[in-house]
Image 1 (cartoon, rainbow, N blue to C red):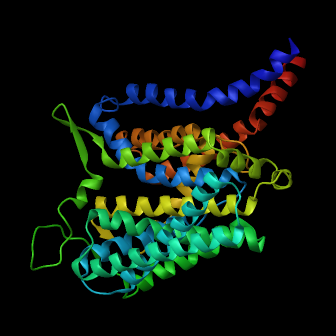
Image 2 (image 1 turned 60 degrees about the vertical axis):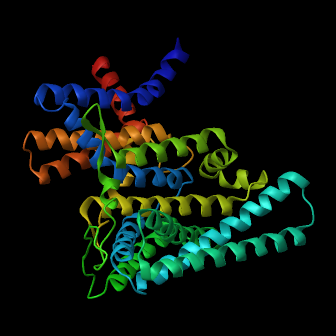
Image 3 (image 1 turned 180 degrees about the horizontal axis):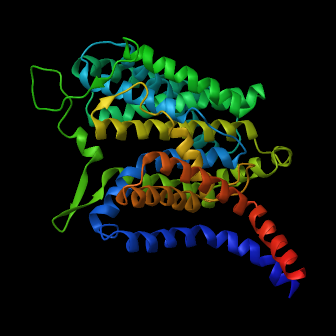
Length: 409
């Protein structure tokens, strides 16, 4: 009997997240006739997808007991780079950064893939030989990628072009965070705070004129510099049975969540991520390169922030040096609401997805009821605190202690 009682709080905490989402649906359906309409549900998915993509990367970082405050700034830089690549037909600061990051990322990935394939087929082999072959392949791929980027600059980058070259910008900035944290043994809060400030400054420098907004004009003109007509489709809705039901950003969000879930639950890197967050020293002593794990999660977080920047640019047709302001706070809040412990080692991608939707549907209900944005911000802050108290068992202990005192009296 005691065992079942001791398990009850843990089971309740696990179910409380999903009960909260169901409660929101019930409350929303009672408070507004528009809440359960397909158009409204589609719009909520469309609105939360950007934050959701960032929150997926943030979940990986927090699982290692880290934090990434730079995701909003990386989004800002990515939106500026995306807009300038689409509109400019000459070398700019954005094109230099984008082509360099794309070439370097392609080369490093080619080198790693080559070494992994050779190791898998021939065993350990000669370390020097593997490194030499890997570097040769990496340099060759880097040169090809750079040549392609140089060829595209005067002709403009299409949808596929920006999808290829913008994410590596975020990936490398995230990798810099991970490298400094892993090798410098510095606190993630300090490193990513510094990157947050630096990335905003870089975004304003690239944008020029103190961070000017770069509009994106769409058209088919051959004489003027315009973005391809297909670019806004990254933020459009896919028609189903004659109705626009599936938002493209939602597909990106779901795809990133599924891939992250598979990685955490089906691959070794997932066990390593949980191990680093749960007990880094024991994981390191078991033979895991914990520095590489940290480098990996921060790189993925930066890359997903750049993907969110692409969707932002497609949605608002602009690049803005402060586009990602406070996005890091929303992402962290969604991860915490979703049950991922800030201490690391405990959490689920599914929980983060539910946390994102809880925030999204809560804001939607309040908007439908005409509640002011100021009160919405206060309510969200209270919910975050209550969620942390519930997940850590503190709220349950308080309630149990109060109940025992009342019962005793």
